[in-house]
Image: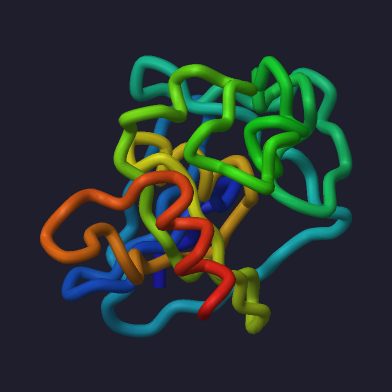
Length: 161
């Protein structure tokens, strides 16, 4: 059995199960076929970020409870992106103008054995999983009545689940 040492960035568990590792600055997809074993070191550190198909490690090696530290997530206003100040009427949210007219999805992510239901802009799905440090995920809902989900529709579906 070969040994590959790297930082776990994600797990894909569809028909072709694989893990995504950061190994010496490169992204490596490893098929989960045959025998393998896991070894995780603690404490949990920031996953860094991916740019131009290269892994950029966290410059702080920051300890995190989720996937990324504030330096690596590069969000302008995390409080607005994740829980907008205008939660009473998400479709009229002006916190980030790019929310409007962008399809959203509802997803299930897991962290070890802990599940989480979430919603995000469809184009941000993989980035969101990386930000959270998810071990795996699946899209639960991307359309309603054949139409892409709005932010408000995704938020309502997330709360129902």
